[in-house]
Length: 295
Image (cartoon, rainbow, N blue to C red; front, side, top):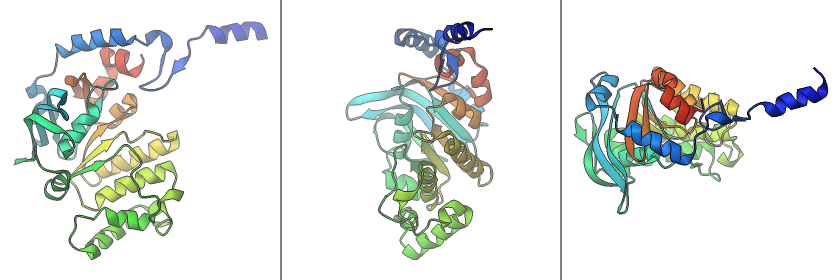
């Protein structure tokens, strides 16, 4: 093949896209087409019995018929969710679907219009965020950079124990975290501003561990990170789930990465749950592939 033919061949190929997955431009649907497809899927929403079965019929966290939003605006319209102890669940869907609003509602950042959220047998629907953390063992890891840049790594960890009555106990727990994560221990006296993006995300996760939560709500763990740090963060979350038994409920912009990680995947569209299955099954689902994985 000569050079001119080679150039023509490259121009003839479809440009690969990033975002929710890897696909070619011919599989990208218009916004209107996605809305039409989503409406069709909503008519086939999973039953509560199916969701319970995915959680082994023994959920540690339960959401039933949740209507929630911000101020007077309702974003979630009757969402159910069940996740078992030590299980991971990933929420995927288009922008504006209400994925982060689910996490916000669990942690107490939204207006709950109706519905219930239970942690084991305890109704935590209307608890404040500090009560969710201290009394129910639910911790929230923000998607935005939430470290205190002018504080040292060590001081940031101590801040994770702000609800503890004993400052010395917070420091003892910080030492446990340093023993687990050498990367942070090596920078304990450095200001958090010098950390890489991946190290800052590690610090955010580690700070949440100071209160020894049972459930981690993780909002967009890969956002803004270089690929090498994305893998590091997911390795950390996998260790927390499988070595320490943490339950993880996650929203992830990279749908393929999130579903590869999670035991269970939920698909939200327009504030409603439209699909739920194991992460592996959703990766093979043609509707999910076409709408959210780019192929």
